[in-house]
Image 1 (cartoon, helix red, strand yellow):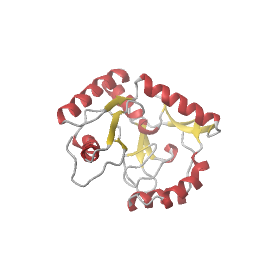
Image 2 (cartoon, helix red, strand yellow; image 1 turned 135 degrees about the vertical axis):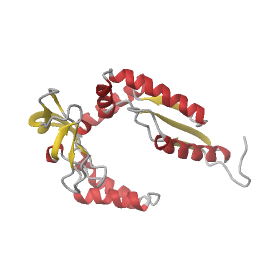
Image 3 (cartoon, one colour; image 1 turned 180 degrees about the vertical axis):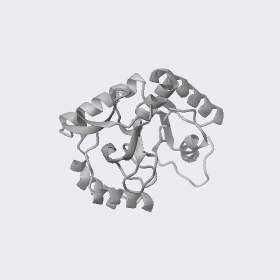
Image 4 (tube, one colour; image 1 turned 90 degrees about the vertical axis):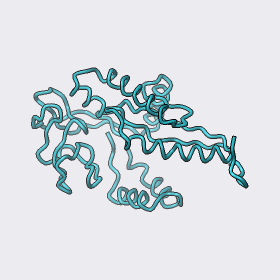
Length: 237
């Protein structure tokens, strides 16, 4: 292996690239984080470090389900097809991943199951009744990407039920202006439902200490995170 002159290997290095959503065929923007991570992985390998470079296809969440419904196919069919496309593209581009996996792998599902069970046993998950948009035509509740409307803060007309992509605010879907179901465009009604929540406010002090003490965080990431903490963390469904 080639090594940079005068450089000494630092030991073990983990390079973890963002997992691309595979609700659609990837574009260059999808590959950019993986290309950047590939540069980092190759750099440390040239220094003589023991590098593990990992990523995978994110097959969970509403983006997959919404796109599958629009195409009239099962979400797993869409995920299987697009995972293969992404895997083939990464190989064709020569991305030097040691492991490109997927959220549907048995190993990943078992890890997530144990992790969530641990969080639950430690008292960080609770249930409560809440109000959510409900589509009377599709006969289903509308979490995050199943409902869109105008952001009540910045006026962006294509804000999702969980977040506005323009101003970055986390949103309450019941507060969207002129909301509609993303599948059939019907105006939803509000119904009550019991939901599971992750108790994020319990971690406010720990996160604040970490962000203030971590000198490696870019200024924009630090300032954005501090703003969220100052506004007050909310339980996440």
